Length: 97
Image 1 (cartoon, rainbow, N blue to C red):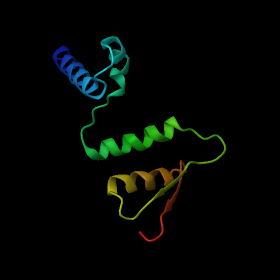
Image 2 (cartoon, rainbow, N blue to C red):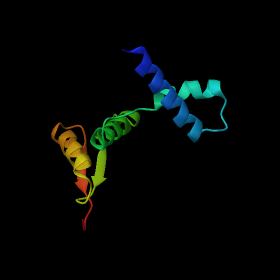
Image 3 (spheres, one colour):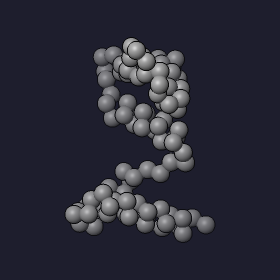
């Protein structure tokens, strides 16, 4: 069961990478394969993006401060509110929203 889906995902990653980086050589594209992440839905993608952004920009002196708005999609606001309640971030809502 595992080999055919694994190969299909590898082909999909290669296709995406060749569209994004059509001037790169194949061996350069191979290094980027794990940078293509497939998610099951928009909410999962939103959560992953937030968590990866926080992970990529660690702060040692204070909590990350994030500004959002009241018109943001619930997938974003619920994730941010959860991170705030866990003490991971400080959250602020932009005025006028």
